[in-house]
Length: 115
Length: 115
Image (cartoon, rainbow over all chains, first blue to last red; front, side, top):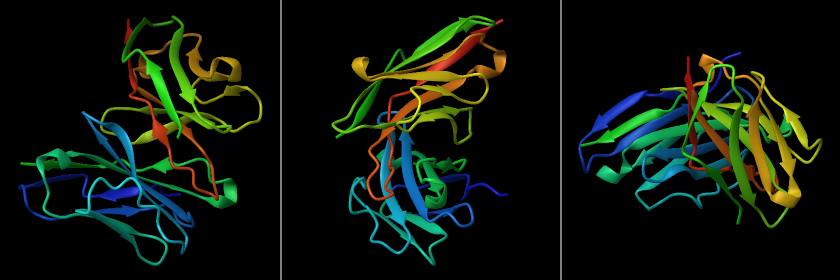
């Protein structure tokens, strides 16, 4: 079946603008993760959703970052008032508790460039 | 808190030679350990994982890794490198709690394969 998809694949924005990044997980996967991959910080966890439970936001770097997951499926990561240090590749992953939950399947990522 | 350290940011091997990528972990509880591969402009693909079963884990594409608790290591090997193995490799650890498997990644090792 289809894997994790993310859109857009590339996003260029100006400093101070808001951006929205979308993730479509694998159908039926209840867990969804966002990570950020940047040259300076490597791969970092941002936020985790599991079913209808409250999300684990412990990795969000500032209050400019937020995410939601509607209907237990699609997720949107929003960055307000973007800064140049937000430039990175944002990766989404999903997993299924029915198969143990420990294997995350990653999307191709969204490359964000803040000018 | 858990973390992993990958020794060597770049590894260059000849085609047909042994590939050895080193990973040491730190965790206060029994960890789950993973190796992921990332090809240019793509997401992460799981190579193999250790989840407290057999200590020698066989993965895809001829890769394997051995969990050594006494050395807190989870090194990745492949007996004979192929040109298609050129990529970036990430070691990761998770401490699984209530279906939360968020990953902490190492800094990555870039592998180049010489003809």
